Length: 218
Length: 218
DNA sequence: CAGCATCCGCTTTGATACTG
DNA sequence: CAGTATCAAAGCGGATGCTG
Image 1 (cartoon, chains in turn brown, orange, cyan, red):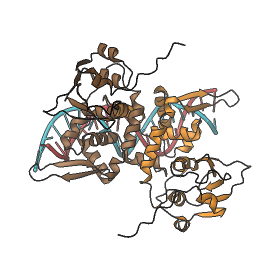
Image 2 (tube, protein in one colour):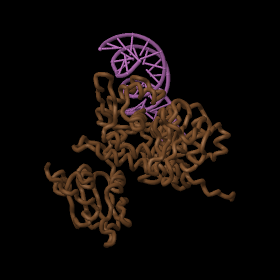
Image 3 (cartoon, protein in one colour):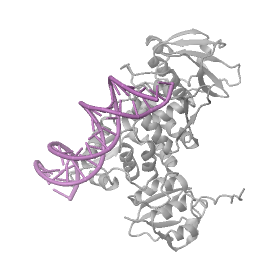
Image 4 (cartoon, protein in one colour):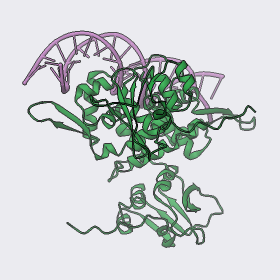
């Protein structure tokens, strides 16, 4: 990216990560940890392969990303965030929070990847019964199932493993589930949008934000 | 901007403000309040006039900016942030904080505007004697002088007025002053970089961050 | 003069094809 | 798997022109 040439820390930040795709690449590395080139491609639907290569080079030069040649058995390069890259987490979170209002209310068939759930889940869900027995929820919204689990009040996502025996399985379109966790839809409305649940609903309800105080009509 | 077409709130945010210049336009409106087209041009050195017009239209359509035709006497359009636009403040702050590390340590003659000071000042300065009598500092770093003043622990900037009688006047290159407030330079080093002061130095010292505990060589 | 719109050359992006 | 090469289309930056 051309530098803005402004002596302002915001402009400097944008000189480095303001380029198209850059913050989405950081999102991928933040949510998935060290990743191979092909994993990044899979998590960035729409990017051209030459752009991903270019951006990774740029970010490496800016010390946001580091490239590590993996051990001989695998013999492949792995990309990961540097300390400077991890320091972008508050930026990603605030942008993600701001962008939530802009999520499509209807479904203009945007691409979706399950691991993207980690951002809204950590923004909007927390365990309201963090004392109780741990709860796990399997979420199936498109590609790979993920597990939601509460870890000391916060809620995290992780890939499903073979030994998981979740308290609840939720499936359906991403729109319905995201509407639910952002409280734009209640459970009935989410079901009307195609959400399906099987198991202990309480496991989900203890993670959802408090329902808004019902606003009486003016 | 082309949409990323991803069902992710970060990607949606970048669909709207990820375009080149957009966040800098928001910075201008945030720091200066409602502004005319020409004021924006002055605060955005390097932007092409057609791009500013385009971006203002885009941001207006996205309900980030609103355009208001001023009263007949002035007969000019005024742009300001909407509620949604003001909600970008945490994003701007976090990006500005992250970008501070990337500020040039030497001076590759970047453009500078005094009102940009408001961001680092609110990020890094606070009044450590907020009980005491108010202090004002005039800062002259290039174009227009600005006044720093402590308002209930926080430090703000505002334009200098005729009636101001500051306790201290600081002048010099932006680099020296920014180095000082971010504690990358101490006062002596800032002076070596060309900083000049006239008046009560205590007024400045009570606003600066605590000096770092001196790190002994390993 | 404020507030753009138009035109033009250059750079960046995106889609596809190809390589070690 | 992990990219590079190629090329058309879109976007950007600079200059200039137009309109109240």
